[in-house]
Image 1 (spheres, rainbow, N blue to C red):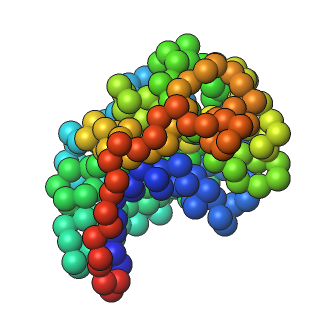
Image 2 (cartoon, rainbow, N blue to C red):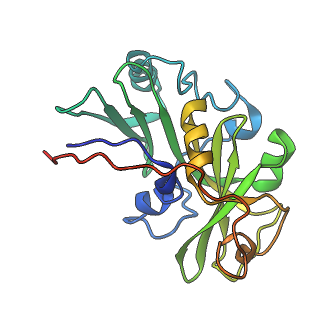
Image 3 (tube, rainbow, N blue to C red):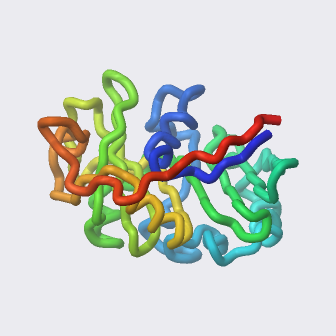
Amino acid sequence: MKFRLFLPGLLFLVVSAAACSAPELRDPNLLQDISLITSDPCAAPCWRGITPGQTSWRDTLIILEDDPTIENLQTQTDENSPAAAADWQQRGGAACCQAFSEDGQTVSILFLRTAPTMTLGQVIATHGDPTYAVGSPFSDNQAIVNLIYPNVPMVVYAFVPGVEGELSANSEIIGVLYMTPKDMELLSVTSSLHLWDGYRPYAAYRGDEDAPFDVTPSVTLTPTPTSES
């Protein structure tokens, strides 16, 4: 299998891609975790002692293996590069979470799909306003607003009831993506983004002629040809 870094243009699609087999984004069977707002046992972008860019891949797997609330931990490596990945689920729950290491030595990304037990108002009370926001449609009655915190660095996924819905303090959080500062910098210079403008209708953050982006890419990534194994 060929692994690739979650490039900025794809970061906002991760939730949708992961949810293909689970159409309901607000799923109580996903990760029961509110550490994003409690900072227990550690503050974002740390999760259960794992911090992108700091924690070794070996220690990451040990932490996951020793966590009694986690099951079905599966790991994969890439025969053509040092990259490695792992995925797991909460015990008795649905597949929720992924970790990725670009170099096979240090964790690069943590992606957690969470049960809808946190709200955007709680996140903002804890971390302040996000810097950027951009919408991702999912279905007729489900959409996502991706909230980007470059200084953490993280992307928080807020649920909106369809593209006609509105973002509010009560909007449920359905996932979070923690990354390295380097990857956040890459996201910031290669993505089209809206500046955060408070609680607004989804349409204000969707990115079209009625809601043009405030930030456009200053760097264009050139894909490197690869052969799939």
